Length: 94
Length: 93
Image (cartoon, rainbow over all chains, first blue to last red; front, side, top):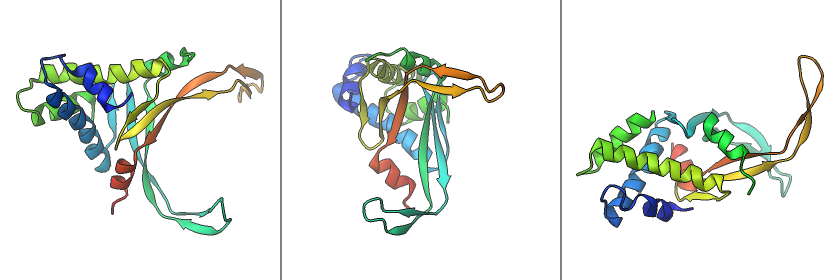
């Protein structure tokens, strides 16, 4: 499933045109992104929580060459599915 | 940010859409993602990230309190991989 499929799902739902549907899908994900970039977590009840975590600098190794290198400090996103969503997934057998 | 704040912000930014309509859309989007994943489908939101299911093998674990062995059955877990655009934006400074 891609953004185009999400557009199809909401298209016609509340009388939106295709273009408007596309815009709103972009806007939903842009708003979540902008919030995360500001360092704030996003909690979507019934779905899950996106958190921003800070990682300190550490020494790593290039697994291909074995060279040691410094890994720069960075921010990463973690996602935790809500309990309802987790239960739904555990039952999946695809 | 909670879902209701997300709905407020999206409703503000889209002309001609009421809050109620925006709420229906936001709920429909997340329900749609959930349903597709529950069917075993992979979700790719370009610039944001991908959601997919990973299979965990059954394993033997131990109750740390009693030391008793317990069988943990095979299960599926959700995996989110952040997209390149978002990863770059997070580490732009």
